[in-house]
Length: 455
Image (cartoon, rainbow, N blue to C red; front, side, top):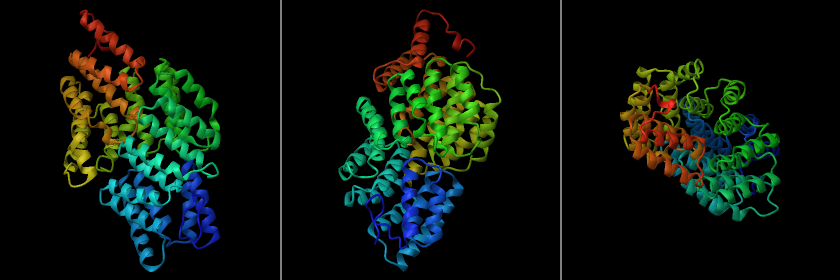
């Protein structure tokens, strides 16, 4: 039975399928645009092979859209039939079991099965990447770090995918606050794998979290080879660049990046949507009117009111509805999140808490009910990590919480939140923190900050 570029069994029977699989693995690790086509080629050659069918299903679920759940379910059914009708390696069986768990609303169960694969073969870079991705969706930074560090034991200096393993390690280090080591490991990974967009973006996260916008912009501009080949992940790299310009107060540059890069292609991928909605909200919080841009996002959000795949996506849909002043749609979305929070699945428990409180807080913020917004967002705040995403992505909700508190006059509580936020960000206050601390100081003196004068 052939082994792939990860030094792991695939169960594939033809050299052509095996070659396409290896190319697909590299494309997935580098966020390359060719990955779906290459996986499709594998399945065209061996349509009943369980491992690529399970891969298709897991990748569909990572897209966080209701219609893709049905595609994942079909892939799982075919994969199970393939397991019954032929021999498949333990790796393939574990991947199929992982897909089944996630379809049942238990992504943690999927992680369990895939971690078993890594225990048996820590050199399996693709399985490491998928575990990394699911843990990221779950907001499990410590778990990401433990998983990758175990897998690194199987990645010796001769492993062809070592650089991509370093990239995942760098991101896990950053999400657990080890910023200096994350930067060093990420740059080391780029030397091994110059096309590792994930590793480059991990270092960009470090620059954001340590308030070094100049260095972050230079990194992104100077390493186009690492992310120019990407699928829609390139929009996320542009988003990071925009955040760094925002920290420098360069609002026109941020709007230009939004219009010409980040939202130039108006997809409905929730990750692209999150880039867009969170960036517009950050701008609005700085007093920059984003106008017609909100309507395009809110229209898309209204088509996703019944999706319910990921709370992270739902809360970004809520940002757009609040930004475009659509309280009716916002109320329907909040009600659907509450209905999903039945506690019988992992995703249902996240919807129940913090999803409901966060959704209600964002809706109240959009309606100008700042005391209510602050109370609900503070209720959600301690558990927001579980919605998934990174510190940088979830920071938009932290900013809204701070501004709601300022507008509601909850100054002591806001000061405490700003102190916690700055501590997370290596103890360095960014432009947002500095401006809000200045607003607090003015409020203490009885003065009024122009940013909040109309609120």
